[in-house]
Amino acid sequence: MKIDDTTLRYDKMVESALRGVVRQAITEVQGRGLPGDHHFYITFMTDFPGVQIPDYLRERYPGDMTIVLQYQFENLTVDDVSMGVTLSFNNIPERLIIPLAAITIFADPSVNFALQFQPLGEMAENQDSGMSQFDDTPDDDGSAPKGKGKGTKGKADSNTSGEVISLDKFRKK
Image 1 (cartoon, rainbow, N blue to C red):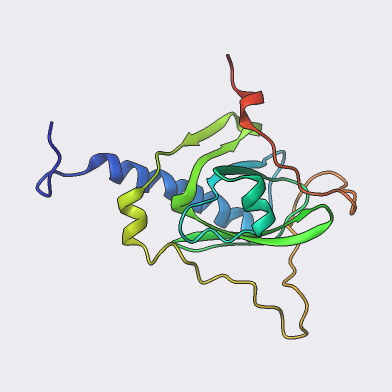
Image 2: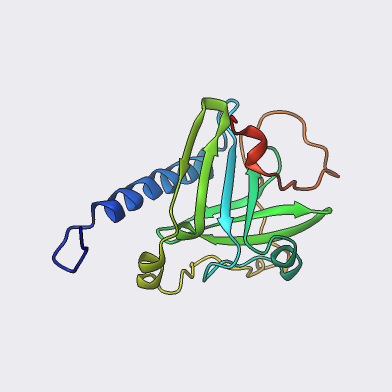
């Protein structure tokens, strides 16, 4: 079947709706923290337009990167276009801005839930280059934005750094 401008793109509608699930989950965690044992694995394309990560992370993860939101994260934000979070890498806090369209996998292993997305070439082009209203602007006192993820379970060691893992270890073979 040939797809043209007179064809309803249900595939894109479904992708958009499912990305809304991701946005809603992050919105709920932003407001009240991670409930119970919930935690998120978020895989995203590092070379997607609008992704803002430090150069050393982009060099280390040239295609995609997985972050884990569980014990240590700060300043979780989300809007209609992107999410932002501050994570620690080698004990250095780094602000990441990730357009929702750059996310390829969203998983919450605590409830055996996962979504896998196809790259959204056309959809990404329709967004203002995937840029978000979130940025690295420091607070009024010049410090980095703060706001530890509320409701996280367990005791996190302040010297623990963020860990990037591959979802392959969790896939059934």
